[in-house]
Each structure stands twice: as structure tokens, then as C-alpha cells.
Image (cartoon, rainbow, N blue to C red):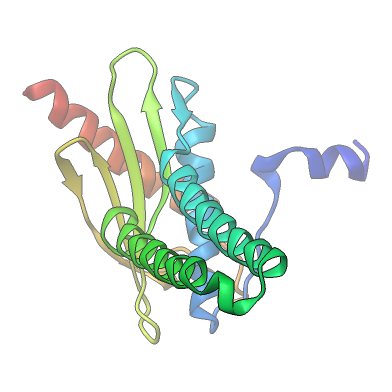
Length: 185
């Protein structure tokens, strides 16, 4: 095998992070969970609704700002006062809606997948405090939730390499427990 072929196989790629950088560790673990959740299950299809909503709100706010700038360019300040006032208020209102969306709807969700046959929606979200070593992974399907807090050291070795097999075992355990819970109902 050549080096190029080695790089094309995502399962064998080692991810190394600075284990003292909490944000980098959280994002690396999020990527490992997302790869495990979506890569091993072909019946799950990733859904981008949350990201698209955030993108639409940002695009709308930028559109309002561009419209205000263009209107002010064609009609200098005294004439464009009411349009500028509306644009400023609309921009801040849109930023408020965006903040509420990211704080209360997304809540750290980094992967949303839809089960093709069973009409189930799976959401993976995580939380890790700034100076804490606890990585809280939440895998939810509709109303059921599994939230086991796991220390970061369970998924990273002493050199800062993400141990994908341990992340995959944890995600598979959560997935199987939630799938079994839904079958029982």
C-alpha cells in the first residue's frame, strides 16, 4: 500500500490533539463520535437542519446589513435615517434569535441523523466545561436520552492520541441501549 492509500482510509487515521486544550479535545472527540455514529450505520443519513437554520439566520442578517449599506450609499444619511434605524433594529433582532437558537435549540448538538426506514431522529450532543476533564456525551432518539459522563482520559492516551476504538465502543453501547429501549415501548 502507498502512503496515499493509507490516508484515504478514515478508520486507520490517528487524531492527535493537545490534551491540555479542552476545546481541541472536545472537537476531536465530537468528530470521533460523529464518524462512529454515521460511518458504521448506513441506514442513518445525516441531516443538516440545525446548521441550515443557523446559516439562514446569518445570511438574513448579512442581507439586512448589505441592504442598509446600499441604501445609505444611494441616499446619503439624512434621507436614509429611517431605513438605517430599521436595519440596525432588524440586525440586532436577528442576532438575538440566532443566540437563542444556538443556546436553546442546538445546545452543543454536533450530529443529527435520520433513520431511513424507521423515521427516528438521532441527535448527538456534547458538553465539556472549560477546565474540566469530564466529557458529557448525550445521544438521544426522539424522547429517550442516555447521558453517561466520561472522563476525557478514557478516550485519549498519554500522548494526546484519540483512541477511536474506545469512542466507538461507547457510542455503540449508547446506540444499542437506546435502540433496545425503543423496541421495548
